[in-house]
Length: 149
Ligand SMILES: O=c1ccn([C@H]2C[C@H](O)[C@@H](CO)O2)c(=O)[nH]1
Image (tube, rainbow, N blue to C red; front, side):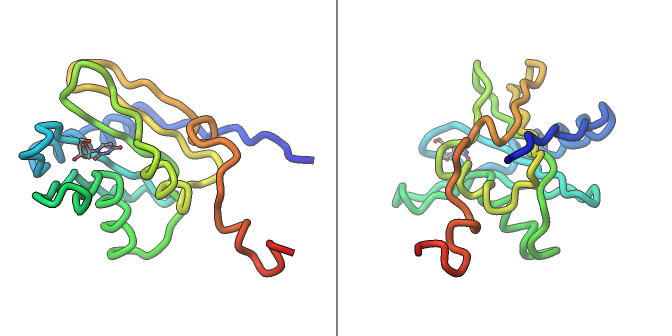
């Protein structure tokens, strides 16, 4: 039987740090085509924070999402770590939840109790458990030896 996991709380102080890290990225975003800067910050279990911004490209599909860049920063610095929380910042009128591809990217490194926060610059953050953002996900478990038999 699967026991539902309760996500561990993130303190107000750490959330403020995460928000600052994500919002800082809005200044660095390279989004000349969509004019939609996105900033992402990832909190690892050990308390490290990794940042990323979207990086667009004239060949549109070659652009990178902020979450992908933040994951790249984490992997290049520390290697694979369970992500405890992700914060997505945008300047729009409504908060932006991670796109479908980024949900899958985050799934690879999400701790079982990961939180996702999102907010505009002006608004207060909304939060969801990652498992509610991507239920019944496809992941490493599916590819374990014998997984297809
Ligand atoms: O989760 C998302 C969704 C979109 N974007 C970026 C991609 C593109 O540069 C811009 C508009 O889609 O927003 C992200 O960075 N993360």
